[in-house]
Image 1 (spheres, one colour):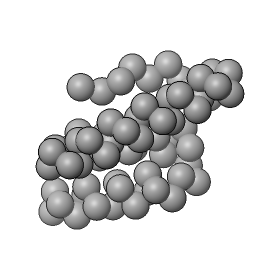
Image 2 (tube, helix red, strand yellow):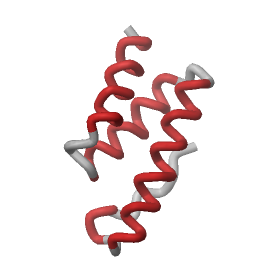
Image 3 (tube, one colour):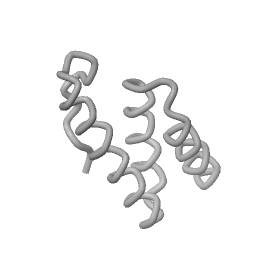
Image 4 (cartoon, rainbow, N blue to C red):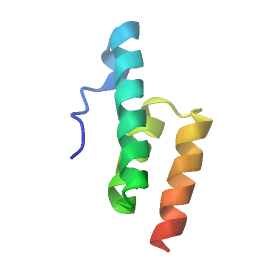
Length: 68
């Protein structure tokens, strides 16, 4: 259940922050449910919008490790 990607780079700052927060929460919840493919997808979406997001990079690494 991915959140729509409204091209976060074109959003106003407050909407970018909301996009980041909602996707971060979703990625964490998916990981807690061991839905690693979905968690990886959400984290990749975050990294596309925020390439220096160390937490998203770390979560993506964990998801990919779990997938083998």
